[in-house]
Length: 130
Image (tube, rainbow, N blue to C red; front, side):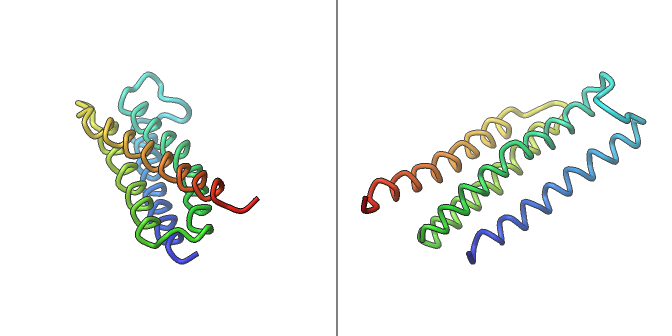
């Protein structure tokens, strides 16, 4: 594993940044739990949660793809796609006057990463000797 640690580290830093942003917002709005009906808090929570929902599975799949000996360019392409898609989604959903283009692009690229990894794994499984 030479490539995955790079993207895992970058995504971890992005996750921490989203966490700190959510914590600061909680502090400034004096909201301990939940969103208290505040749309800004709800957006921050959903950005953070959405990241936590998709990134672990994508990293596991990417780990398996790299572990099966995928070409470096493919692992980088999938890792970069994941990093960009999560950044685009976070930016789009974070905006009070949301630009859906970022949200849609982020989710489309997330699904592209997941399907791309799954396709690589299924292809390798199908061509492996029985």
